[in-house]
Structure formats: structure tokens, C-alpha cells
Length: 245
Ligand SMILES: [Zn+2]
Image (cartoon, rainbow, N blue to C red; front, top):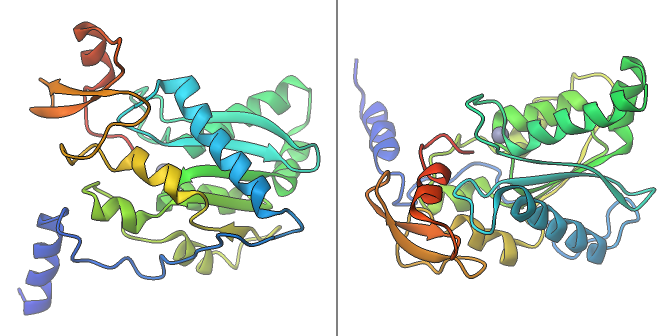
């Protein structure tokens, strides 16, 4: 039976660009803070490197602008990188691809499965947008020492993305029964640089990032951003679907 409440929920889902919905508990802002003895300037440095890992793997303005790096702060080094490579496997978000990449790095060092499971607890995952519930769950199953994100789910909802409106905070709150390490969460790091990467896809008036140019996309039916030197053929290969994030 349809109640007024049910109807209003359908209304919200049907109008994803109106920003009428507030994602609960999606306001974790750790800007400026020193957490686990790591100064904010180091957080900024690595979040910027997460963006750069995206460009390196996917070009200057990929529609799916989700980039992830996994960092060993003890060694002050990136262990591995990931992005949404659009392989057809819908679980290969940036975070999952980075976890896969690090697992391969560890296996190549002849680490045992037990050693690999234990390694995550020493590492920090930096992702330029807040993880979806699938990836936030994977982060908790991994037992990372730290999870650091830039742009919020609320932001991406507000600018037109289809998102799962469950914050990482709420996923973590429901993950306390998991064994092993707790994971420190730092939200909204360097959003002045991460937000613009997600703001152009559904808004033709928003500036393209990194010198990209806005041109008509036959597959989308409106103007999106392309690398300035991309050919028409290349454009079609980089912009051909809607399962990105
Ligand atoms: Zn995800």
C-alpha cells in the first residue's frame, strides 16, 4: 500500500539533481587536523597524489574520476594505485582495484596470505571521493589503519551522480563487530581540488578540469569533457556507459 512517505521517497529518487536529500552522517570533515601523528600537509600531499594517480591511469578528465592510492606512512611511500578501469566488472571501483593491485604486489614479494591479511592494518587508503558502501565495507574487511577521502557522497549526489546514499560513517558504525584493527576515517581532505573533478559530468556549464574541452558526446547526448587531443574515435572509447563509480 502506498503511503505518503513511500511516495515522497520515490519522488526523491526520481529527481537526483535537485539536492533535496540529505545523506545522514555525511559531514566528517577532518580538514587541518593532525591524526595519528601525521600532519595535515602530508594528508594534502597524498590526496593530491591520488588525483595524479587517476590522471596517470585514466587521462586528464575521465568521466569516472575516482582515483585511489594505498600508502605506507612509515616508509612515506605509495604501495599501489587503482582507478575505475571500466573492465566490465562492476565491482572494480578505484578502491577495489587498488586493493587488488596491492595484493598482487605483496604476492610478488612471496608474502603468505596471513602476512597479506596482516599488512592492511599498517596501511592507509586515500581515495579522492568518499567510498560507496561496497568499498567502505571492503575497507573495513581489510582492516586498514586509515581511510582518507576527499569529496563526499552528499556532494556527488548534489551535482547529479547516482549514488548509494549511505555514508562511510554509517558503514563504519555498523562494522564494530569485525575482528582486528579499527580504521581511522578522515573526511573532506583537499575538497577544493577533488570536488571539481566530479562537478562537470552532469552540468554542461561547469568548467572542465585540467585543460579538457567540452564537446558533444554522441553516446550521452550532451556535451561532456574530453582531453584536448582526443580523437572522435578515442572519445567514444572513453565515454560509453553509465556504470562508473
Ligand atoms: Zn565503490
